[in-house]
Length: 562
Ligand code: UDP
Image 1 (spheres, rainbow, N blue to C red):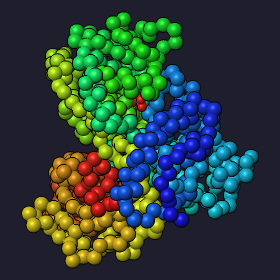
Image 2: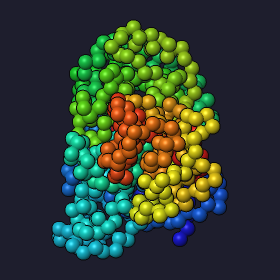
Image 3: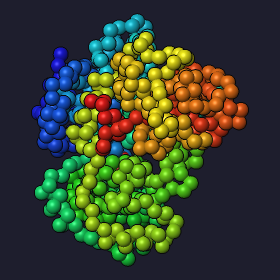
């Protein structure tokens, strides 16, 4: 059946259920953005032309909202608790629905069981039963519930699952045996899924799929009006919880010399003691009113927490400049409580690395807050800087629809490895050394690997310098790491063609392989396909890295990926 774009969202609002504060928040958001989604669908339909789109039957099970997992979020929606997840789930549901797929939404174990056909009351069903869904979107809580209640069919159908995973899961943490042997065990990891089945809030590592969310868009008239109506001395502080203001008196004092400071900190009856009296605190605002506040403000300022949420993108989209602190040394699961136990070693160099690296100046200023002069100079410079509202394409409704469309039509983790793909140890790899001898390219006269997505001809392979991860190595060349290309590269021939002087070649389990170890001149191939990883580095190794191009403003997709 062909999927048909939908623009009337009233049935979706019914599907989303009711009762919980979190669901009310999500439905309000979806309703408010209806016109924006409809316009985006129209544009994407035009762009895709006659492209065939199959309608999928999709179950969305939001595990963290189930009572069985404690549902700690719903009661905090009106009290300054995290809203980023709710924003993202609302947008995922809307995107799937607008794309025209068959949708079921569950937020309790009972509903999950009845949709999976598990008789209620039975712990789990020992038999494999046919699964009425092509795809299941869930989170780590939901994954655990499915494992417990789906019996044998969990194993059979796990390839249809997509896990919404805000901060991402790196391959080393995902592979159970490897994680256990090498100290990568956490509360969350070791599911042995294809790492691309994990879908993140920001494009952290290309080992996972980038899901994202949307921000409200402005038309040209609105942009003009906003630019004209900005109060050049108005600042809004990032953070709904009073605790983020603790110990920030010094910065607030400096900022207060130049600007009127606004906050949206939740409070019960009295001003929270952490928020100084010179701050105009509005209390937690409904989302549309928060947007209105951002439209008037010049500066949106972060004090280091929360990490990587939606609000800075909304601020920049509404014409604010985002000022944030640089982290030196970087924060990670090794040194920071918040990231501890998360299945990633990623180092976070500022409060919002996406804003820093993908947007940057003039919209984003990342400075060392330990240096008061640098901080004060930034504020003065920002007040003199004019910016236009800006929203990266991948965070528009059209961009999100385009990305999810591509994933749904092309990502298939159930398919057995294609016999047409070159074997890991095939004597010949389908590459040639590029004319300038710096990297490998797909050989023109080689037939393309059929069914490979992204298409194999997008591949460019580089040997990293010692200690550099593939994520960074590809970025160094204006490209992005593409883990699905690793199997093509994992051969002695690839090293040979790159003129790497291997004394010997061995095949082992290591998330940094394929790589060239320098003392000893040894070349290593990857033995376990689940461990192919863009992330990760060690000064001992020069990693062999598969890179590809990407669309401007849509890093998840290569030029030929649609
Ligand atoms: N937000 C809101 N009212 C406020 C402040 C923020 O509704 O007073 C919304 C904001 O529009 C954003 C969401 O809260 O979409 C999440 O923001 P944040 O970046 O703080 O992420 P979180 O830490 O909540 O996940």
